[in-house]
Image (cartoon, rainbow, N blue to C red; front, side, top):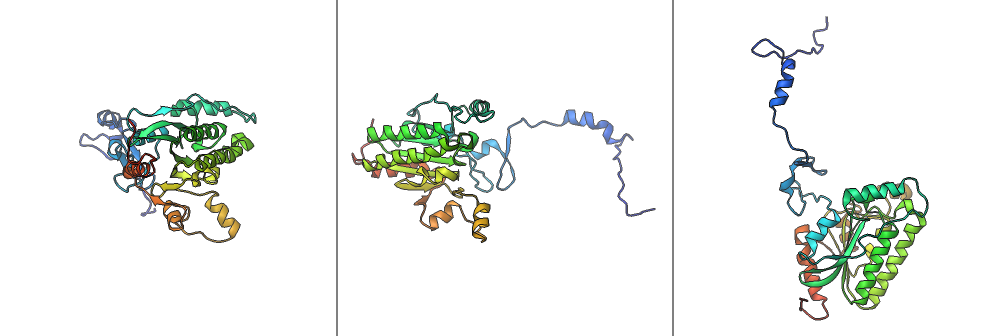
Amino acid sequence: MNLFKKRKYLPVGNDGQSDTKKDGANEANTPSVPEGMYIKCPSCGQAIYKKSIGASKICPECAHYFRVSSKERVRMTADAGTFQEFDKKMEAKNPLNYPDYEKKIKTMQEKTGVSDAVVCGKCKIGGFDTVLCVMDSGFIMGSMGSVVGEKITRAFEFATKNKLPIIIFTASGGARMQEGIVSLMQMAKVSAAAARHSEDGNLYVTVLTDPTTGGVTASFAMLGDIILSEPKALIGFAGRRVIEQTIKQKLPDEFQTAEFLLEHGFVDKIVERDCMNNVLTEILRLHNPKGCERSE
C-alpha cells in the first residue's frame, strides 16, 4: 500500500451528505457577476473593475494603457460636438480576390461601427480648427489598405487647401496583406500628400500609439513636424525576432518602445494620455498663424 499516494476525499456536510450533492443548490445561491463588468489587464494580469479604468482607459493597478477605439479617441481629443467626419461610408474592395476578404470587412464593420481602420474629419481641439485622423487597431489590427490610404490622403488635401494643421493618431500592424501591392502603394501616396501639406507651410503632428508598426511606421507616421507618443507604445518596422535573426544579435529589452525611440531622437516627446489634449492645444496655439486667436 502506498501511504504517500494522494487520495480524493469528498467533503461531507453536517447533515452527512457529500457537498457534491449540494452543488446545484450552492450555485443557485452564489451571486453571479454580470458579463463585461471586469476586464483583465494584459500587463499586470489583475481583474479590473471596468468603471475604475475611467474615460482614459488606464489600469489603476499598473498604469497600463488599454487600447482605445477610434470613436473613443475622437471623444478624448476633439472638443465636444465639433467633429465632422469625412468619407464615412468609404469601403474597401477586393482587388486581389482574396478569399473571404469581403466577409472579413463586413464582420469588422459590424464589430467596430466604422467603415475601415481609420476615421478622419475636421474638428476643434482647444478651440483651434484642426483636421484629425485616428487609426483603429480593432479593425484588422489597424492595417493600411486602399481605404485607409485614400482617406488619409484626402484629409491631407483638405488640410492643405484650407491651410489647417493635421493631427494623426497612429495604431497599426502595417500594410494590409489582403490587398498586396495596392496597400503598399498607399505608403507613397500618403507621404506625397504629407509633403505637399508641409511645402505649403502647414503643421503636421503625429501621435504614435500602441502599436505603430510596418508600412505605417515606414511612411507617414514618422513624417510629422512634431512626433509625440504615448508611454510604452510599441513602435517599429520589422518584428524583433526578424531583426535578431538578421543581425545575429540580441536586442535590448526596451527596443522598439516609445522610451527607446525618444532616447535615440525618433520621438520628440512622450505624453501621458491624460495630458495629451493640453499638449496638442498648446502646440496648435504656438503654430496658429493668427497667433493665440481661437476660431468661433
